[in-house]
Length: 308
Ligand SMILES: Cc1ncc(COP(=O)(O)O)c(C=O)c1O
Image (cartoon, rainbow, N blue to C red; front, side, top):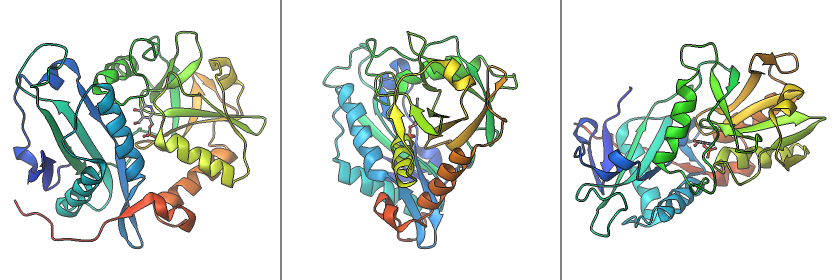
């Protein structure tokens, strides 16, 4: 992977290669960790982080579900992220804050004496999916059930569900998987939410089985600005086959059009007009070209990069 100068670990910026942990770290064994995926972009006024506050609010929400006391407040974590970007020497890319139960006790249920450790890393990361318009397969694995876990928390252990779903399409022509819920309704992709367009109305899966995506929320704001109606309503895969357009949203994938589902091409198999207009506006917003969204950006003042 592409490395940068430093990683923030428990309050201190250290060289990238020095950011190590003990093999008996609780989070490594049981997935008892929470994380965020945030993007920052080059703009005319320097680099800017998109929706930092919202991501850090979700980070703390996820930690709370695991009974995890993060030894910093939201403002301090935001400041630490800004400092990590400034010292990393990276102008555009991806930010990964992670909080995990550390080393000290191997009981499954974390005990009060177990330390909570925090790291923040950033690195350049361009396209997450390997094509701009993707072929998708329905996974035989259903999305984690809301009665088995807190499905809207970004808990590391949840991602085994995404990993198993994704492994099944490795070495096939599919670019991504779609997970259904226990009743056969569409939940989401392995790392992204889904939208479809039918009769010029936009549908997306409601709260319940999904991660409440920050990009999903941005798509809904954009749609409103473009006078498009978005309904949060459950739908089955059959509705995707007959949709006019379908697309994924997520910090990593941004807005990515879906060409086909289980081999059935959706409409003409191209990026549709509505998807294209939402994607274009999204790119303008994150690159600081839409003044109405400037408050969603945290601009980074340039500082001297850390030398290692
Ligand atoms: C399972 C899952 N769903 C949806 C999303 C999209 O969320 P966001 O738009 O906040 O990145 C992600 C990405 O973090 C994800 O991992």
